[in-house]
Image (cartoon, rainbow, N blue to C red; front, side):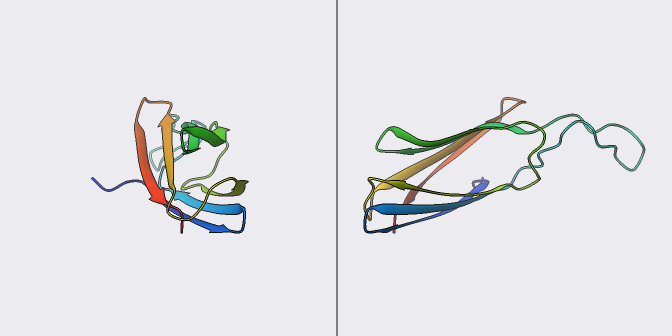
Length: 103
């Protein structure tokens, strides 16, 4: 199965810029389907980015984040060809992770 996470990380000088797009329904539990039934909540609870075993970004989310969230941030201390691990856990216990090379 392909990862739900697409990521690009580029290092310039001492700053690494990260952009990630995560495919996930991010249902809040307050929306109804076409039949008028409430769609149960299904959202990412924790999103983590790690560089060399150190967490460089952690997001604790709820149902208020939109479908297929996009994240962009920067951090210091990485260099080209380092690995960046991205992982998430949702409220139903599903998980996904991927590793990207910093360009």
